[in-house]
Image (tube, rainbow, N blue to C red; front, side, top):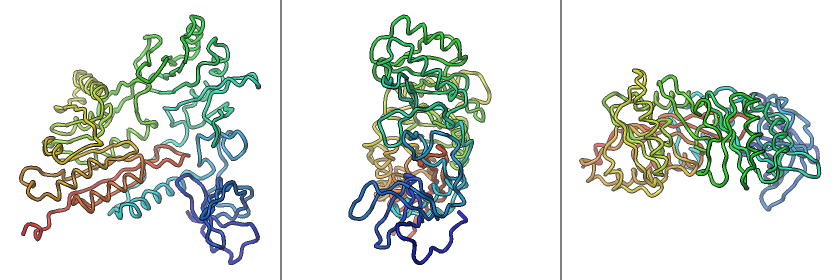
Length: 475
């Protein structure tokens, strides 16, 4: 960011000098007595006034009321529903900040977490992985609310810091054709007999299909089902799924049309999925992320790779086009069965591009890993680790424990290289600290992945290489 200037020695009464942005996209300032003030809507290097909403001994929370000196990185938000006004949508937090500055701040968050939480500094800072900043969100969960007082139905995200649903008429982070569905969906729900018992519509876009999952608390009438079908007919490519209870109850309303799937064309892979499955929100970034992760991993044809937290096989199947053999491990039998199904579907497709190496899928609780289990899994040349927000502490602790047990080095060899894909910089930093300080690795590179533009969410990628053994430790 380029507009840092010297702060005035004395600011006018009530003014605050903002010098940072926190992980929740709030401006950070300090009062003359040192008390920290978190200011919603303020940006670094601005002079502002703010209304305090909450006071604690060491900090205050406030909302921007006036800008006295504006940051050069402040931009006009594209969405009319973004802002600090009453009823503003809470789906985005950074539309007022230039996207390049958003990425720079996320990179700083990653580096700060690695250092302050893990005492780790990457040898190389990777170039950020970026993509489209609008229309990128192919997955979303819209709340539905019948507002009797206003005589309308609302379909959208929640208001900022509120349980109420924002009165959204457009959304610029979902694909344009989905944004155009918001008002028709309001009209549709308003016409249903089940107007009071449909609290949610989940969106999942594939390459050829837009799936809408209607959560309904009571059975739908025949008339309502007919209206859903008419909506699909009027909006080609829209596919309705019904969810009467939990995610496992989701069923396709009509089986006509293409399957819900996405492609990884660089690897000749097609990934079918259900709309409630976990898949990456941003397919454009996901394609680049998979490529980048495999390039960093640098797998050779004669090598064995383990993909920890393999999910549906987003990384496992591309790895199987590069490695000698692959082991994919996930936490549930059902998910492992789906991964295996995706593997078999691609293996039998007959394409030379998708010739897949032998791949085994295993279900296991990865949050209770032990050194003994790592020994049982056998030696792998390289690991790919893609955990949920909780991170992979048990796995990294087991690896560190094995490293400390020198008598086992003849029976088991640690992976020479680990690529760690993270959706939480704090747990990545914690796990990186274990790898670097207790397991014999160095953090060769790290960088951010801008999976969620205009939000404060930080996704990242880190590369760990095994340090050569210290000869003195063998004595």
